Image 1 (cartoon, rainbow, N blue to C red):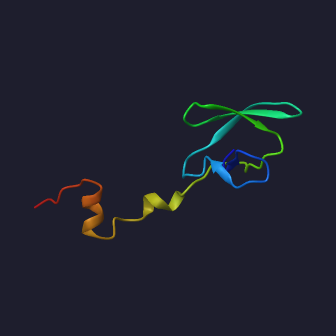
Image 2: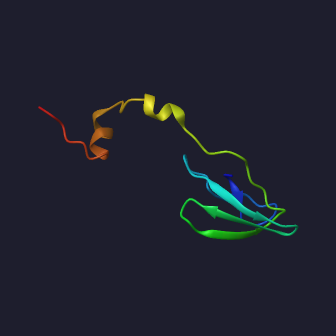
Length: 80
């Protein structure tokens, strides 16, 4: 799961970043228990919205740093 809402009919707040996900442990008639990637367990009503799958950004590894300033932001020193 990803993009999990904490309240029914509200916007999603959990597991929205790239690579994050949540696992469904138990689902009953009224309550579902999920585990988020930080190992925190949440009990949520079944009426909450969630999306199946994992948030991904596959093309990120293919893009370069684009400019010298970005490599400095990543703490990569210039080589001479």
